[in-house]
Amino acid sequence: MGALEAASWGLLGGLIVEVLEYSAAIRRSRGRPWRRRGEPGFGPSLVALLLRLAAGAGLAAAAAAGRQISGGFAALALGVTAPLVVEKVLGRAGTHEIPPADQLPAGEADRSDGP
Image 1 (spheres, one colour):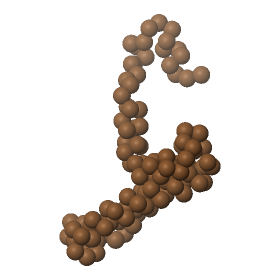
Image 2: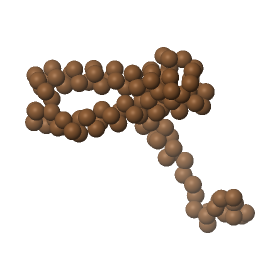
Image 3: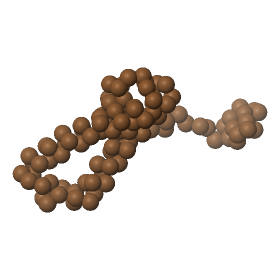
Image 4: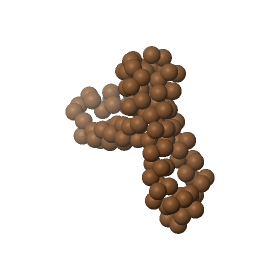
């Protein structure tokens, strides 16, 4: 599967989630959600929708380009779960502390600055 096809599946996955959430918001507000107090306006809702769709499509495309997924269902699932996947990856990225250079063993401080 190519990255473009995976992006399409990821876009569909994100769209499925957004449609279900919008449907619940319509029921909750008994009309257009952006007209109800406490709900975001139409503009912010539209921007959030587009960002969500872009995240799902981009994550699925990146996974396919890196040969991490090979099927449409996996790309769809990445589109559905994109915010959670990104949150977990970012959470893991910040769990490893790098000690200050003065606390590294002798000779390590010179290599910690890069190539």
